[in-house]
Amino acid sequence: MSEKHAPKPRGRRRRGGRRAAGETRQAILAAARKRLAEHGPEAIRLKQIARDVGISHPSILHHFGSRDGLTQALAQDAQDRLNAGVLAALSVRGDETTIGPLVRHVFETLGDSGHARLLAWRGLALSEPHPEDSEQEMLRSLTDAIHVRWVEHARVRRERVPTREESGFLLRLLGATLVGDSIVGPIFELRAELDGQPDSRARFRSWLSALVTSQFMGGEVGESARDERME
Image (cartoon, rainbow, N blue to C red; front, side):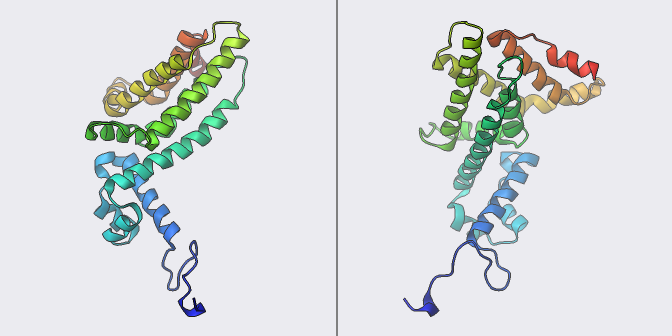
């Protein structure tokens, strides 16, 4: 192949200031994440995202194939960020080995990004879950992380070591709470603001972390709330 017809290298800006393929893909994902976080899954519309990025609609199809392909990529992106945060949360050590940091990180990564609503939306849209999709990989990673922390805690306290199925059930409980809160949470938050209790979302997450720790790991419910009042 002559130098004249050699393919252009990926990852660099092309002549005239055009984005390289990888940069365009990341710009599309960033615009989709923004719409998801601000307006929910129904706002992920390819033509609008194309306008946000300043590209053509067919360009998005070139990179992701379809709207479903884009939502799959968003799921993978959330999984990557969640996995990185889970490793960081697992490294946190205090007087007690709890899953509180994990609970908070999951809510921040999936709840604040709008991905929990995307999970609910995809779950309603699909007749059957795909066994090897990004959501399933995410669930496996989270189950493993929770199981590691719970087993460590049980061994420190010389208590019965939980099974991995029990860790899966705990994640299922947290997942159901997360998805439900992503849908109806804003209604409760509005009610709390009207009752003069702003920032109820953060307090709810702290309360849930304490509740899970108390129920499964011997902590005390209300610790977080008391700490907040003392600050």
